[in-house]
Amino acid sequence: MTKVVVSGYYGFGNFGDETILSILLKHLKKITSDITVISENPDFTKNNYGVNSVKRFDLKNIFAVIKNSDVLISGGGSLLQNVTSSKSLAYYLFIIALGVLLNKKVIIFAQGIGPIKGKLAQIFAKYILRCCHYISVRDQNSLNLLESWGLNSDLVCDPVYSLEGNMAEKTHTVGIQLRNFKTMNLNLLQKLAMLINSKFSGYRIEIFSLQKSQDYDLSIRFENILHSINPDIKTEIISDNIVENLSKLEYLIGMRFHALLVALKFGVKCCAINYDIKVEKLAKDYNLPIISMTASENFEQIYQDMQNLSSQNILQAVNSKSFDWKNFDELLIRSH
Image (cartoon, rainbow, N blue to C red):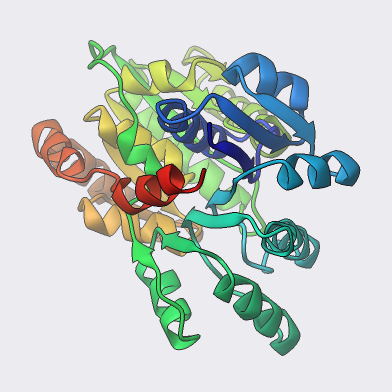
C-alpha cells in the first residue's frame, strides 16, 4: 500500500484549505488508506478526516513519517510565496526538501506559486522544485513563473471544483463574507451596510466567518454597523456548516476566493470584493460584479448587475470545469 504524507496550511480552521484537504483525502482514500497529514491541530485532523496526523512543528515525528512514506504531497493553496511571510515559505520548502533528501516521490499539488521576493529565496525555491517529481499549479501566473525557471508543470483548476453536493432549495437569504485584511476600511463596511439595508432589508442576512482568527471580529463589527443603520434587520454570524449554508443563499457578497467558488458551485448570484488578484480573476471568469476595497463603484449598478446574473448560466459555466487527477494518480499508483 502506498504511504502518503500531506503537507499544507491545515489545522488552522481556514475554510478554503480544509475544503481542499477534504477533497484531496477523499480522492487519496480510493488509492490508499495509509495517509498522514501534517497539521497545526492533529486531533482535529484525525477526528475530522479519519487519517493519521502529526503536529506542524514536531520535526522529529515529521522526519519519521516522511522517512517511512512513499510519497510527499505539498499543497494545495498558496504555500510557496513570501508576501504573507518569509518564515512560511521557508517552512514549506524545508518540508519539500526533506522529502527530496529522503528520496521520496514529491508532488506539488494544485498550488499557486509566488510571488517569491529576493534572489536567495528564488534560487532555493527553484532548486527544490526542480527535484520534485510532479508539479501542478492552479493559475497561469504560476505556470509562467515556473516556465521562466525552466520547470514543467500542469495547469489545473482549483480542487474545489471537485466539490460534490446536492442542490439546495434557495432561502430568502443574502450572505456577506468578509476577512480582515490590510486594505479593509470603514468606508467599505459602511457602503456595504447601506447597500444591504436599502436592497435586502427584508432578507435574512448571514455573515460568514470562514476563519475565526481573521473573520470573526470583523463579522461582529459589520453586524453592529448594520444594526446601527437598521436595528430590525435580521442577521446571524455563520461559522459552521459553511457549504450547506452557502448553498442555500440567493446572493453572496464575498471576499474569499473559496467562499465565492463554493457559492457559484450552487448557482448563487455573487458579487466579489476584490482584495486579491485571484478573486478578481474568478469574478471576471464568471462576469460577476466587483467591488474594490476603495468602494468607489456605483452600488446601484452593482446591485442591478447581481440581479441580472443567471443562476443557470453560472451552474453551466462552473460545471464545465473539473479537476484533472490523471497525472497525479499515475505517479501515486507507481510509487509503491
